[in-house]
Amino acid sequence: MYLQIAGALSEHIRRGAIPAGSQLPGSRQMAESLQLHRKTVLAAYEELLAQGWLETRKSKGTYVSERLPDVLHAPLPLRSGALQPSEEAGYAFEPHPLAQHLPLRSSNALGFNDGFPDVRIAPWDALSRAYRTALRQGFRKNLLFYGDTAGEPALREAMTDYLRESRGLAIQQEQVMITRGTMMGINLAVQTIVRPGDTVVVGELSYQACNLIIRQRGARLQTVPVDDAGLDVEAIEAICRQTPVRMVYVTPHHQHPTTVMMPAERRLKLLQLAKKYRFCILEDDYDFDFHYDSHPILPLASADEGNHVVYVGSLSKVFSPALRVGYVVAPKAVIQSMAALRRIVDRQGDNLLEAAIATMLRDGELQRHLKKAQKVYHRRRDLFCEGLQSALGDLVSFQKPTGGLAVWAKFDPRVPLPALARACKQQGLLLSDGLYYHPTLNATRLGFASVNEAEMQQGLHILKEVAKGLVW
Image: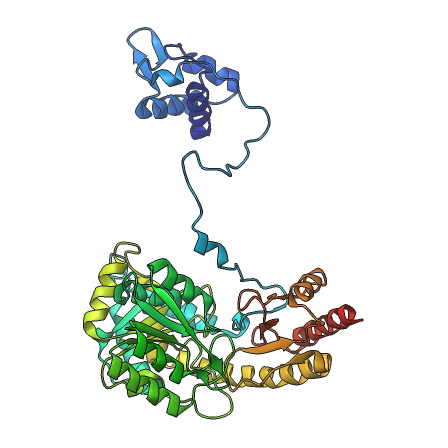
């Protein structure tokens, strides 16, 4: 209450309603006027005295300070009505043009999204137990203080072991950095390795957020075709013959957004090109853990003998997009440089969360959850593909993905995606209008993992009715 009084008085003083040099009522008189205890008013006056708004004059009372800036002395009319949020800055400011292209997508509403996990099946109880352990041990293990910019050492160690076992990476702890998700890892890698004016190669269809990061760095973006086997490696070589290439960004496991898998021969060819032309391969392995039809092909990084690959991944698809824990694997010198760069924008990650996840990795809780989630998402993929084909027939074309959490669907021109997305939203179903992926393809990613069977049927029914309504 005393802070409310102090705040109101300082606002009146600031606006000139109570001029500088004015005497305030005594504490007893003010208390009677406000029907409050005198000690509350005294506390408010003491707060304003400490802040410099008021001054006391011996044997005279409490006055508004005479030393306030002149701009405060002229009375200003009090505002009528509630304060409105400020929309415009009081200084020169222009929104960054690239930032306007990032969609805001995260909701528990019914939707076929970009490929989010089902947060309801995540091992929250196990994470809660591990987090409580981290809290109890926080002081003893230095988890409550500033930590290593490259990540909590316990998680770096556990992640090193996990990536060795699951991805076949021959790495040491010094080659692993923990980040706040994949985008931070990509950003740090680009900022560290790429220079303004450098050439960076991506697919004509690619992860748009990465493209924006590359453009923001001032690099020259070169695109190559994407077919049923991923990036066209021959086209990459053609670019290398014409100009030096600094980096190639690739999602070989399940290409984003098309979900196609790059076969072994292309992967080996790409590694050979990196060695020959001395460029960096930025390998984004955002959903390696979810592969259904066979054992996944090991990452490019597992066959990298020339230290050309920077490997990034995330646990957001394992738990939830809200848990921002990712990782980068790169040569030690690159990791050190990335950690130094991170220091000027983000002091460190969440020590407690990272320690808790390290416990889950060591105890096998995370691995057990992945096996469970793999079965759940495999079934949902099959149900969704069958249901999508049954609901829309020749109005949609797609290939059943070998893994991942979404289907890349191309719609008949009679069903324009922007109109479809708007109409579906009115019926309670969210999906992308496809413009984020490509402005003219009339294609989008339809995520199936975050909806259970009943929700999937409900969404497909809405999609079917809306699509047929647009055609008829």
